[in-house]
Length: 178
Image 1 (tube, rainbow, N blue to C red):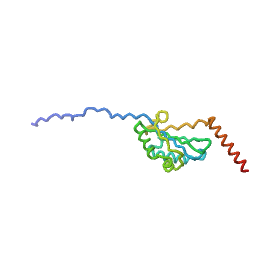
Image 2: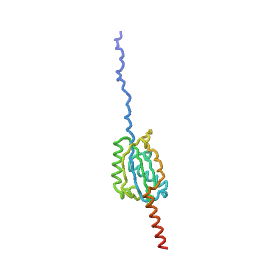
Image 3: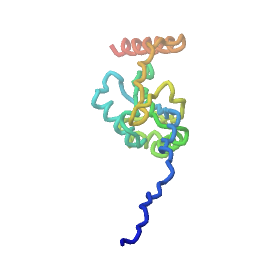
Image 4: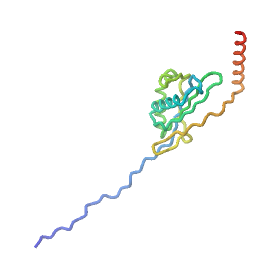
């Protein structure tokens, strides 16, 4: 007769485990870079602006969608342009790291001029602000919202008086030379 065989036993199963949870996304922060340069805002081409944004993307080490920019005339008396960049990142630590990196790479007007290929009038200002109004979360990270155009410039009384005095002096000089 055949020897009895043991009944097959089921292989032990591991206790069910919870599906891994994704770490929560840190709150949006925006690194704000402000730069004043020599030049006329009307002479800046879309290609020049795109190249400058690409340089900021590279220096900040962020995806292109994370950066938005705005240009505006800085002064009625001098040909200067104010550039404002918002660079969206996730959380305070990333914002501080990006701010530190930009401050290290753009420590002076001359270094900013060399790095960015323009004539910086002063040291770029780099700060961190709440990214909520400036950034939106997408599948691939935070994207910068386009900055609103600057409000129409209305000169202050002092600026208007200074502008009028400069125009009067220019007319007097022209009259004396004639």
